[in-house]
Amino acid sequence: MSKEENLMDETTEPAEVPPGGEISRRDAVQLLVALPFAAILKCPTAEQLRARRFVDGALKSAAEGVAYAPRFFTPAEFRTARILADMIIPRDERSGSASDAGVPEFMDFMMIDRPGNQKWMRAGLAWLDAQSNTRFSKPFADAADSQREQILNEIAWPARAPLAMAVGVTFFNSFRDLTSSGFWSSRIGVNDLQYKGNLFVPDWNGCPPAALKKLGVTYDKFDRKELRLTPG
Image 1 (cartoon, one colour):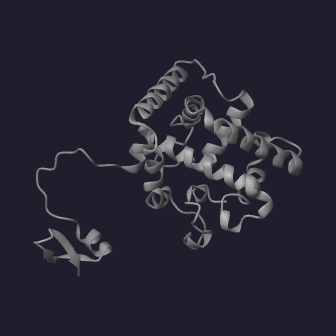
Image 2: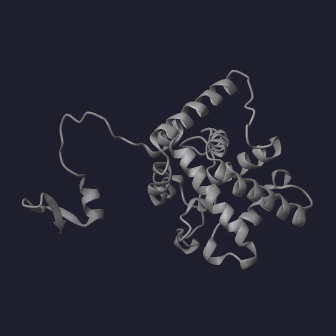
């Protein structure tokens, strides 16, 4: 299973992935750019700030040799959450992975801050272990990469998932969205987006031709009354 495919919106089908298999993180970001921020915006700004301070503190302590002790997850659950998050957003040549960005710690914070999420998270991780134990006689975290992917292949695409996997599909959708929220609200995630906002631009030469072409608009037909570009 493509590592980035899991990030697709639940209505997206595998057929939209370019021929050849995997898509790049850049392409995945273009497909998902609205998703993490939409999820994050559901949280009050104060909560977002608390979460980021908490995660930054945890990562700083870990860098100083103090291992993070989860408050909600058991050690086994935390290990599974870390593995699953990194399968959804792996490390690549552009930036770090979900765990590099502190996503597991972010999730742990959110489970305490929003206890209404605890039931689906704990039940979902238990479901993964049950599936792995049944198929491979070992918990999900101890399974081989190919074995883990075999399970995720059956729940990552809701439209084609077997009815018997409905519980796993629901869990994976929620876990993936929380992973995305945690990653793209982190410093690593923002850098990964290559966001260029809040920068002083001394000279504005208009929208680049390639962008105009992609949007199907042209400055030749600028609507001065509406102050907008019109289709070329």
